[in-house]
Length: 190
Length: 271
Image (cartoon, rainbow over all chains, first blue to last red; front, side, top):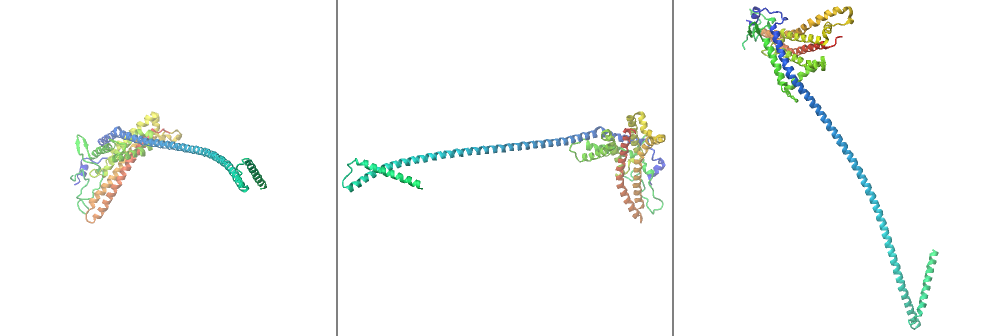
């Protein structure tokens, strides 16, 4: 049979369920205060400390990340500034080089011009000298040839008559003068 | 374990259609236990044992979780932190504010988990008895909260202010004031701790009664055509067990929520 019911009915009439028996009240409170003691004195301070540490760690991590970002930004700006400087410098160097190059070219050009003129002048002088020399030689040869020719025509040698050389010279001078006049006339006529 | 009075609250031999015995409905006797042992006139019974085991369970759990708490938590610590945070933010900070409430967090956390575990015994095999369905346990805790409330009221408001707080003193009410003061006095000082305790007790009592009822019926009806009814009854046992799991948490929550509100009332400036 139902031992519990028998026991409950025989040993103690079930009391009002709303009246707390003192032993159970005490045991319940003792049980609670043991829990409360452990949690309040040891375990919750423990976890609070750890939670604070975790928050600090997370915030520290965030601060570190922010610092790293700022540093990266700084480095980027420095780099950009350096790049701009370098570009500026390069432009300046290029400008300078261009200017130097232009100066050099002008100088070379002037030098070339000068040398050309020198060479031309030297050429002219040479030609003049050659012409004079040729004219001189020609004059002598023409005189001799003319004298020879005249001698042959006359039948006697005119060579001995050195005095006659003055006549040849006079003739040649006249010839030259006539040629010069002709050329002047031709020039004027043009 | 033999089927003695400490494990079973009813006779499993009796069935429907068997003459000479009837359905043994659960009653107040289902909440009375034979002492496990006695020291003089002090009887140590099953609810007391379960209450003490509750202490061990709660302390063990938080010791395992927070004993060597780490910044990077393990599984246990994470679960315990969630529970701790639930009570701290969801109950204490909500009612008392972060600054005022911090002091009461350990008390409320202990209260919540202690009550909850005591409730959970209802559906733990072999225990199968909610400790809080014995009025002494919720009453003890409610009296403790009441004492805290009275202490804080007079500490914070002073003697006169304290009485004004308790009696809901408000000059602008005029002629109704005396009546209100009497009502408030009884309501706050006498009825409130009672309702605080009974709300938890009655919920767990009724829940346990239902589970026992359907369990007994499942056995009793299991004979002949009665097996159909027994099946229905058994399904109800399962359903009620699941429902109790929910109620146990809700009642623990409500008990602590009310405790928080009382403390808040004691600390609030009277109006």
